[in-house]
Image (cartoon, rainbow, N blue to C red):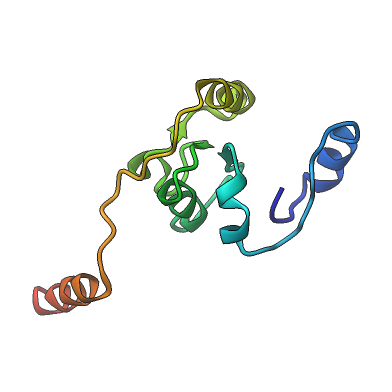
Length: 119
């Protein structure tokens, strides 16, 4: 598990007998190639870069309806259904698919300049 948060102590206790590694804040690029699913438990996100990164790497994402999760292609479920959705994602063996077009640096710059001209 990457990151930290208010649930960390409870999660460590609940997963004592499981093969769960708590790595804290780390670069996800090292972990995404071996990940089976990414679970976002955030209550609030400004954009959702971790969701986009995972989907772009082909890892399925399960998340509540936060930030760009739905538009990006994550499996969006109510908070009470997160565990069930993770189990379904693991059993399906489906790959994550990023539903957003990723712009190149030049395409992004052109689009940004265009927004300035239209203001």
